[in-house]
Image (cartoon, rainbow, N blue to C red; front, side, top):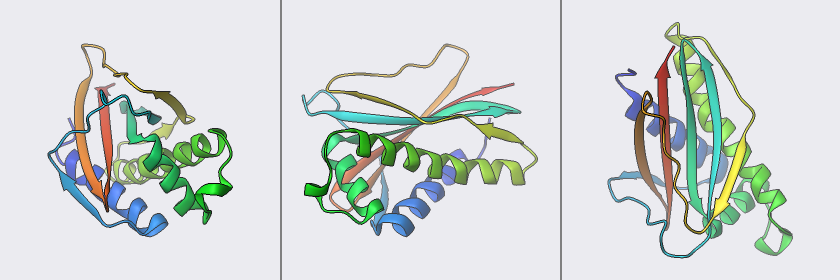
Length: 155
């Protein structure tokens, strides 16, 4: 559907994670284990146009807090509750998907973004409908892991 999707996602994640939070980013084939009982978070932003889809960013609660601290220039003790982390992770998804959207628009594939949404839990999975194409990519970000799932449906 999008021939160089892996490169687009890798470029978007690397740009956002290095520029906004000073992480060293390295793609990896090693999947994230969501069945450890540790809390995880998925932030999502969709896009609608010639190509329609949704992009999920998966992280452990601990890594989401670290990204929030780096993004906002805070200490962990400055974060009270989940709302600040949810907002920061929604913005992270916005930035990553915005980067991808920009490259799609450059190729004549106009689209608009949806508002971010957040899913939290300790054991969950998100599955596509049968007509969607699904790709999952993983990244080492210093000592932490980020998963990026892209679901696409050609309009």
